[in-house]
Image 1 (cartoon, rainbow, N blue to C red):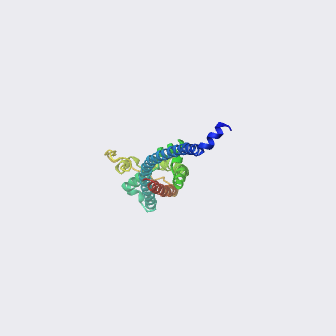
Image 2 (image 1 turned 135 degrees about the horizontal axis):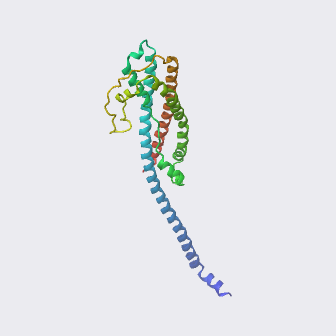
Image 3 (image 1 turned 90 degrees about the vertical axis):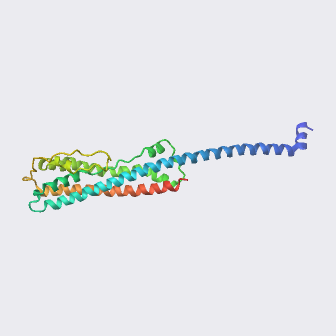
Length: 247
């Protein structure tokens, strides 16, 4: 009889046991490696989530600020429309100067996207286990892109149609008496300046045209504000999803 076969027959139990030990050792090593890798992934995920939370909290603060600024522009524009409908409306130059300054102070939301962009471009999105959160993060750039068109429409009308009306008929330099930059900076203040000795020139101002331009500017800010309110809701939902996944 073949001595190898004879040895296997006599010691089969020991050989099976040794084979099982080797097999389970290999499986165990793989399981341990997978466990360590998963544990490391979860640590990385927590770091990413904390970074995302800070980023979206900044975005929430900024979009809130812009909504308030744009609502102020809408209110000031309405007030100026109502004012120019009154006889001898041009006599209240101080009020006109303050309203024009307020109309200028609209906001444009410039989102913080560094952490989100790095997460997606770096191929680390798979570290996020929550599928709903991943969907929100990948949809964020699309939300921002959709809002950009209304910003561009607003600045085009303001810069090339409304500003020339202001330049031709009103004392814009008096706006320094009313401008407030506290929404952008805690430290920057407009210097104290004397009121302009020049007077507004509204004798040839086409009031119908001017009212229409103001109204379109108001509408543009309406659309911007609607977009930013949608962005705010999206940000708030994203923050809730992030927080629900932070240990």
